[in-house]
Length: 340
Ligand code: GRG
Image (cartoon, rainbow, N blue to C red; front, side, top):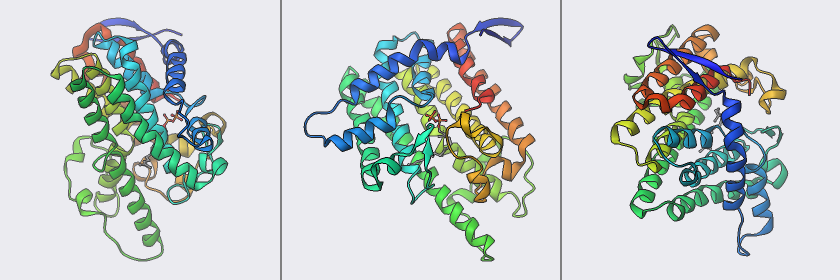
């Protein structure tokens, strides 16, 4: 299905997410399958766990984003595939670990039992570890020249590291623990490195929480890193492999950060009111556990409004890429409309 996007009085025809996915999905699946073939050193059960968690399911939103960003900058899809697969591997590792009993303790993911439910906790942890390592091996060995490979590794490492993905997850764990203690009547404070920050006020929505807004700050801080990290990394990696200019890379990173935050807000909205069959996992869990979600802190209407504003800002950020950015606009609007 085609639809139109109006900007500056010009109506551009852009492809739907389904059309873009139809072009890229098989390529991504084949490449992932190839990069996840292991030598005799890899125990068969470990290989099975890695491949079970990664292949044959998932929307592949991040690798599609890498390929779309590369094309928008004039790059070749074939040369962007290793980076696309690397991001999907890091994303899958984060899902496997997030589902573990020590984290979110989920039984279903991508419409099937979670990796630890099928293979046990130990092997699931190792499958995640292996995917993380394989992602960097793929970037280092499949991208050339070596200097470009190093820049790609640095981008993905930064996004996956303690100030972004892992840091966001750690703050989420701390916040969930704090909320549990609070509801048990104990008083507690948010981590100072989060509650002391003021730069999160760029999107003004209601900040009427009893603690004067620090809960609002915290929920934004967590969301900005936990999910957005892999999004800005995807957009930037696409630009890097296309050898885009510094201005294009900065635009892609801004686009990815805004789109990533919107993606997480919509994820929270789906958790609160989505269809579990379509989403492929148990819903209302965050809600029932009293977790810090966007709708819980800001309300449904303000959350949707903020997501919409972020998507508009994301599209604006990549307007410097010109007509080539059509697929990036489609991906952004898909985030708002997605049901899974
Ligand atoms: C364990 C280091 C570590 C990090 C975990 C990814 C993550 C951080 C937590 C996952 C919790 C979660 C469900 C967040 C919502 C946003 C999100 C990442 C959803 C899953 O991404 P999709 O919808 O999933 O793209 P598919 O299966 O389509 O790839």
